[in-house]
Length: 614
Ligand code: DGT
Ligand code: CA
Ligand code: CA
Ligand code: ZN
Image (tube, rainbow, N blue to C red; front, side, top):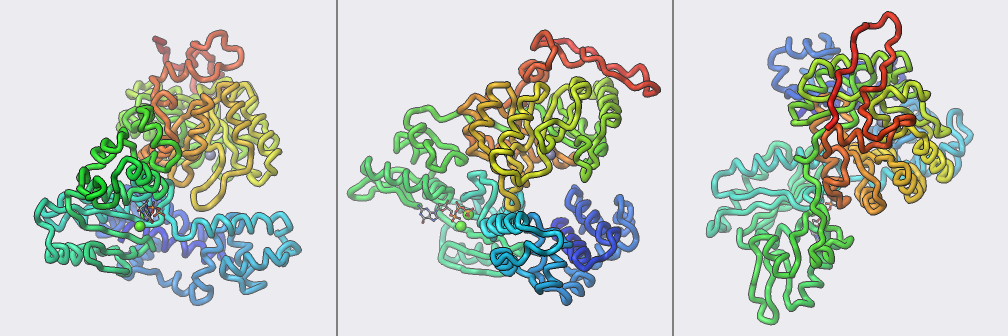
């Protein structure tokens, strides 16, 4: 059993308990165990072979170890099943509606026996919620907005889920034997979209081996995959099935000589394909999933690779992330496609959290893990005091954190550790810290975490105010969207990007698969306006640092090149290129010249290491 699956069962138990009105400590234990399993690098199935491994995990006692073992052996958990006799399973989907917490869900169930999204939508439409305690007209509106997001999201999966499922399946399919040459994802997964509707895998065989018998035995092998819930179709050269988590998969088995044409076709997007076929027709060709063929006698001229098909059509190779028919075909014809940023060009990470606020690892653990990834620097950005749910740091704790960061940096771990903070943007656009604190940070990152439903004009003003604050250097997860869960907050992006450009403020592309914010189209708008981007993981554990690739993929979809992204720069250049601090007499002033005010009685003698600027 996968960690994710065990975690899901524990999390659902926590949610059902909370709806049921259990004591807070009780459901939190399940929630915490679920979080732990989600961030655990080892397989819980393997760990559980020795029970002591389980109880050695932080926060897992004897009782929880029993529950986990029960889940691993029976595939379910008795308390969860018991609760599901009391409440319909659909009630859990109500919790996916942003703006409905367990208390409200329980209330709706008690009052109206409402347990589905449709029922709640109807109640909101009929105005039946506005007079209830804890609700109101505004919350009816918010519920209807959340229903919209829910409907749009139904049946889609986060990119990281798609990628993990694809990886496991690919290794299963490849284990069939050496007749299999390539197993590769196509579709939206290959284009790096933030969500996938289904997986499209292509399998090619060694030339001359494709026979009905072989296809038959490969299909049989694929359908033995342990993650399959239901087979949908088994055709001549295609099998379709649904995985246990509900994700559908189409696998196509094909000849190597048409691999390029098939890859092109099934990678899509559909809009790109349509435009490409139009171009082919104008040039006297016909293009389908088997080949590019010359008209009128349909003699194939290309098919084995995408490169040769694009070349025959007079186009440079178009990276999958750009295939959305938004100008990439003309750009390819005119040899002006961007040289897209590559993961290898990222040499630092500018947003992450430690145990000081809501992270799971210490400053040094994060630094060493980042060094392992080949980075030259990181910035630690624990939350500020307004974000109480994430244990945000007040002024005193922030100064203490800066001191600890300086001390860790002075150890010369082989990676530079910058003191930053994810300073909360308050409702009125002011920052959560006064200037004297902001002045001591190497980098000031600002983000919104509250009042996300302001009217468009008010939200625009709020973000403009934050950008106009002379200390603001980077805006974190600028639209607040949560992929599949919450839409971006409403504001005038063009005005905000113009202000970012004017003040030299960097916009973040948050790499977490839950956020991917800014998204592709906004990144492209930013680039066109000359606004620079920081791609940051917002990691809450060392494991989270490895999610950078999703941010890079989103950046590629936004047509970004290395030059558009600040964390491709060496540390000193990056710092020198950020918006200068108020009072700094030169843009090149290194940040460690800011005297760190150490409060009396706190570790004297810890001073920032002196650095040379090139
Ligand atoms: P998804 O699954 O909703 O995340 O998005 P895709 O892009 O993976 O779409 P999917 O799985 O329906 O189809 C995979 C690719 O196959 C798609 O990107 C382009 C190609 N394709 C599918 N149906 C059509 C079609 O009717 N016309 C054309 N030209 N291409 C199609
Ligand atoms: Ca697909
Ligand atoms: Ca498909
Ligand atoms: Zn944040």
